[in-house]
Amino acid sequence: MSDTPQLKHKYGRIDKDYAMALATRAPDDDGPIYMVNLMKYHEVAQYTDGTGVEKPISGREADDRYNPASILAKIGATIVFVGDVVSNRSGDEDWDRIAIVRYATRKSFIDMQTRKDFGEKHVHKAAGMQRTIIVCCRPENASLDGHARPKSDDDRMVAMVVRRTADRAAAFREVRGAVNLAAEGTIIGDGRMWDTVQFVAADSTDHLNDVITSLPVYPQGEAFVLGVRASMDAITQG
Image (cartoon, rainbow, N blue to C red; front, side, top):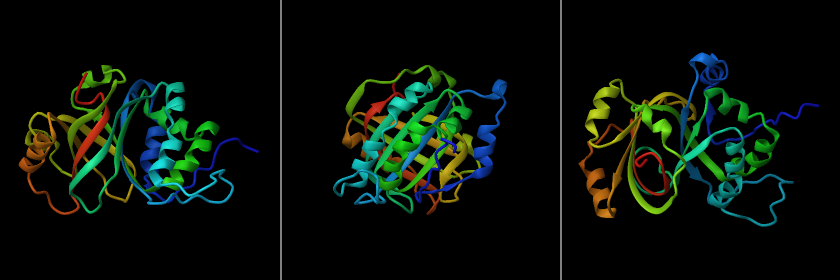
């Protein structure tokens, strides 16, 4: 019997064509990739029988149990951003938490899905997550690849914009002072493909609100504009 886990979930649709492209990327053409996770939790985690959870817990608590940091370290991946969403200005859905992982290669992200230790943790993510979008990106400025895992910041405020757009360059110009990521695919989501992800650091909650207010009103379903309180941020700081 194979030890490869069969990961079951209901939190999003996998883009199988893009997954195959990640898995088969030629080594000479591979390299770091940023997986930007937008997460919405169940109020109460939806565990199935036999998971070893003695009492009901929240979806957020289930995701905390999932925390794959130890596995990521084994494969050379780095968590570079974690934050709680404090405001949702635009979009069809609201979000609870943002996390970004930088993988050393695209293939390593796919390989992780087949690890037994990852499968054992994934049951918690499957139980806790109501829906998620994972946008796979490269930074506009490749020097971001050199940013190390950051120290915890606890209360760093960041505005975040996720967009569908045919003109990435214009989108990057539109958000002043942003750290820009260009999406090459959306590996898990609701069928929409996202094109840009941008971050602007704010000095305070008032500054965060000013940044968000200054942004255009995007067409419904074409963008998420979020205020995030980051506990870890190697995206807007080196």
